[in-house]
Structure formats: structure tokens, C-alpha cells
Length: 309
Image 1 (cartoon, rainbow, N blue to C red):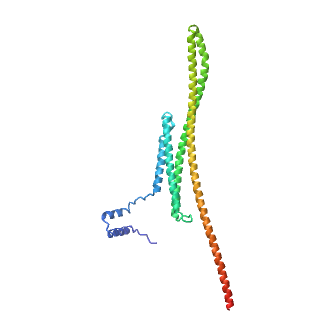
Image 2: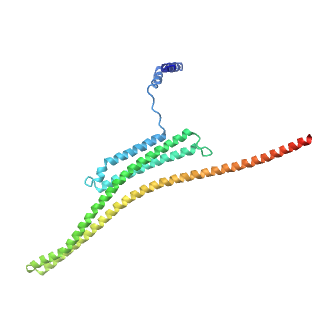
Image 3: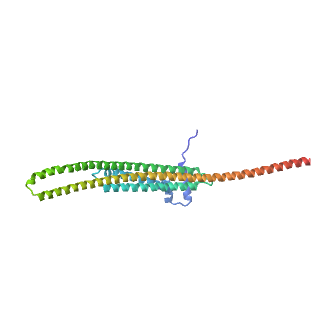
């Protein structure tokens, strides 16, 4: 078996000779020869650039979550307003990334429509492989975004549970204070009865009225505090449920859009099938007519030859 010969230098000499014959100067010739050593990076398509940008956005979202995780979970580091601000920024991040993924999906659908022939079949296998590759990229981006949003949902669930746990002990304390306020009148009456011999009757009545007003204010404030705590718990619960519902609605909207696209494609396929069936019926009728005419001419020719002989 003959050994393979390295003819790279011969190829470079041929390129150098062709470049000089075309009038290249030394700078252009040096750049051409350098291109054999240092290859230029391939030019990315707009779809690849948009996919990389979306991936970077999801990465930034994940870094933002990991950076502010302790601030969001620790009650002593940030206030409720700051946690709400973090939650709003993450929700806006997720919405923006989802919109970018939807744009990529729409570009793939448009490319599929333009690549189909008149029968709805892809004209090139290479183009079909490219479209399948793009579908894979969109699927990876969607799974990545879903993973990050699931992490954020877990953090929201923990915050919601903490809010409930903080609201429950307050209710118990309020009940204890109410019981104490009910029991305090007895001790107050005892205290008032002891100095009743030293103080006059108007002072005792005024003190009793002040004590009654104080207890009424305590009861009213405790009721207001219970109402505020219940409202706060319900608001946190509604916020968590709203985010979960929006996540599920977004997922269902994607599924509905996919089903709609499949239904549209199935309708087009049925229309194309009907056209093909009508063309086949026409061809069948024309071929039948031609066969009958051929048999008639053949029979007439045989009879004519028989009569002629």
C-alpha cells in the first residue's frame, strides 16, 4: 500500500502563485496565507444570536435569584416592600424571556411554511434537519426557563408559609390578651373597693369610666389587628395563587397554540388530500375513456382486416 503524501505546501504554493497572478499585494497575500492557519469563526445566523441572547437572559435571571435568595427569604435582612420589588423584577424577567422564546417559535413556524412545497412536503432534507435543530434549541430554552421559574415558585411558597406561620401566633396572643382583659375587671373592682373609704365617689366613677374606655379601646385595637393580619395573610395567599395561575395559564396557552398549529396543518393536509383525490378521479376517468376508445379502435381494425382478407 502506497504512503499518503502531504501536499499542503504544494497547495499553498499554488495559492500564492494564483494570488500573484491576480495582482494581490503582499498584505493581501499575507492575509490569505494566514487564513490557512487561523480560521475565521463561522458567522452565526440571526436565530442563533437570538437563542444565545435568550440563554444569557435566563442565566442572568438565575444569577439574580441566587444573589437575592437570602434577601428574599430572611425576614431581618429586607422589608416586605423590598421583597415585593424582588418578586416584581423576577416576574418581569420571566415574562421577557418567555416573549423571546415565543419569537423564536414564530420564526421556526414561518421557516417551516416557506420550506414546504406545493404538496406540503419539505423540499430539502438539510432544511428539515435545521428546523428540527431549532426546535431542539427552543425546547432546551423552555425547559431552562421552566426550571428557573420553578425555583422561584418554591421561594414564593416558603415566603407564603412563613407569612401564615407568623400570623398564627399573633392570633393566639390576641386571644390570650382578650381573656386577660375579661379577667382584669375583677381585680380592678377589688382595688377600687379598698381605697373607696379614702376617695370620693366622683373620682371612683371617673376612674371606672376611664378603665372601661381603655378596655374597649384594647378590644377594638385587637380586633383591628386581627383583621389586618387576616387581610395580610389573604393578600399573600392571593399573590401566590395569582402567580401559580399565571404560570399554568401560560403553559396552557402554549399547549393551545401548539394544538391550533396542528389543527391548521391537519386542515391543509386534508385539503391537499382532497385535491389529490379529485385529480386521481379525473385521471381515472380519462384513462378509462382512452382504454374504451383503444379497445373500440382495435376491434374495428380486427373486423376490417378480417373483411379485407
